[in-house]
Length: 437
Picture 1: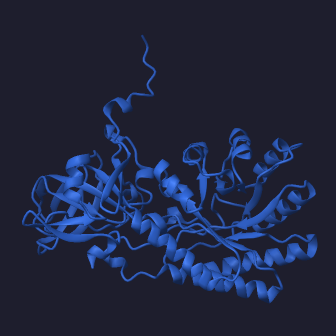
Picture 2 (picture 1 turned 90 degrees about the vertical axis):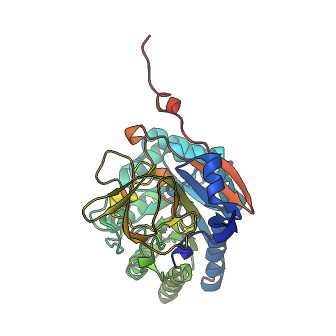
Picture 3 (picture 1 turned 135 degrees about the horizontal axis):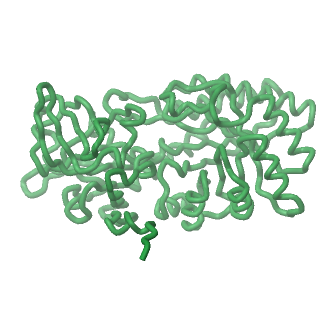
């Protein structure tokens, strides 16, 4: 069951009289030898498979037009950007940095969408030049946009981010739709914003909301869709405006450990949204909007694997510790959210378990623990362990704490490996320093 958390091309293969984990036909021990550790691996087949599943179930369950937006914050680099472009996905960017990466990957403006709760005038001015859609988070932002677009013949499409006053069941730090959230506009503010856009001839085309990230039950989306459609119905009657696009966000979760299995499918999530949107529009006599989903984590997470080398092994009064060469600097999720992961040794992964094991990193924090009480075999120093479901919100949230140098990232496809992000060097750590003569 544990191996089912890994990318779809993962196998246990015999080599040199021992069993090794392989992904996309590549031996993980050989990759560690070639590229060093910590090392992040991305399996293209798993990315392709998740995307194909989304597109198939959207066609099956939603009779209107659909689009998919990749969440840049989950992980974005040039190689991922080119994969996004190859598959004609949109990408959402928060801030000038993500936008720069996406543009550098060749993603056309029409497929670039900008989010953010505090876009300043410089960022908005840049976005107006470079993107196809801006998601407006608040009324002051809308006022700034109106000012800096005055007299322009071409303006990006605008969506308004509604705060429905609801949240999904997930960690408090990743809930985004509740009344006191920093994100989005209240119902009253959204109504005001729609009127403002119409009066000032701004190209308002869509409504957006997002209830939270990494949730497993779509039920709270039903009342949120209902709230949005009630607003649309009222605005249509009063002002004659109807959104061309409705985006109920993303955030669908993935299984990170055996405790999460079996996990509700992507189809469960998409079918639920599609049914409630179709039924709600039919009940109110509204035209079906284009349905835009943002499947960031559920596209990228399973495709990624983090590879570490074991150093010291400690036995305390009640715990066996494996201390590895990476941790919260490249994966802060356990420290931030209490996220639980699983792991397998690269060599002979089917060995019998010895007992519960704690896997900790090298950093000067007691919270630098990636996995707690995971049944593991008898692991020896210098062995390699692989942690699955490492493709989202890890490298993108990594840091240089304790002088950590961010890991290399390798792309795997049909028996080939390709370096897409080099490992940081010590020289990189002082590259931004201004050194007085």
